[in-house]
Image 1 (cartoon, rainbow, N blue to C red):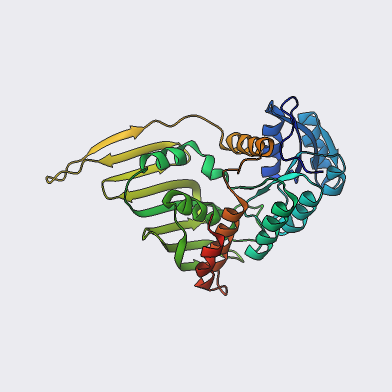
Image 2 (cartoon, rainbow, N blue to C red):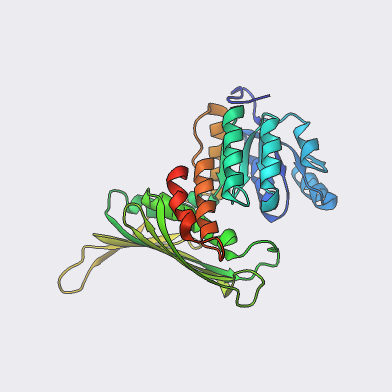
Length: 328
């Protein structure tokens, strides 16, 4: 039951698997999009599924098998990461297109199996790296277009999230920024120098990660769960300018026109208002309907989890050398 290009005359029938914090947000946005009909949500926590369904005016079902039996054009998988592989494969086998929340799977090999299955079945696969759709990130990308990039530094810190149980900061947070580094530089990461520590948690709660891209750009990620407030910033140095983006306040500033006396010019870049998740889901639905490639491909999702895993103790930096196979 493949749906490569659903008819223009009707909204796409969609469902959400897993309605925790992120899944509930997906359901909320989908319920308000004219191009989508939110048919149902699925979650083993029946009370939570019913709460979301009643609020949004859709059905609640106990599991993804019951959801897929409803015959959907597209499905969002927002279940815990360790379930992404098995659930996504079931969605694809049912002929529905799928957006899998980041990371695409627990391992790069599982991610590759999802990519291969989607290609074989002829359905759209997108990975939910929502930060790509942050208007501030887009403004940074626009500001550095055509520039000779030298370095990228990203800070993503905040307090410990009680919901996390089976992953540390690298998979929960840094995977966003690994994707952003590859996207901002239009290049693969080929060298990884990670430093991680489990200061107060069972898994790593501090990570200082350094990278080099195939194009020669040096990149750095500073992430932790030890900061009492959230901070999300991107700094990009080019041969002619220095661009700073605050991903929370969505302010982007570029410094340029350096002079011998040490002075320089500064300007604030225009940043459009848009909810990143809405933009992401609209891109996904458009790709499902048109058959075009979505903005964040399965291959790109695999590349990001591959690099992230290589930053973890015991996995080694050798995984970085595999990125040529996952060039997205």
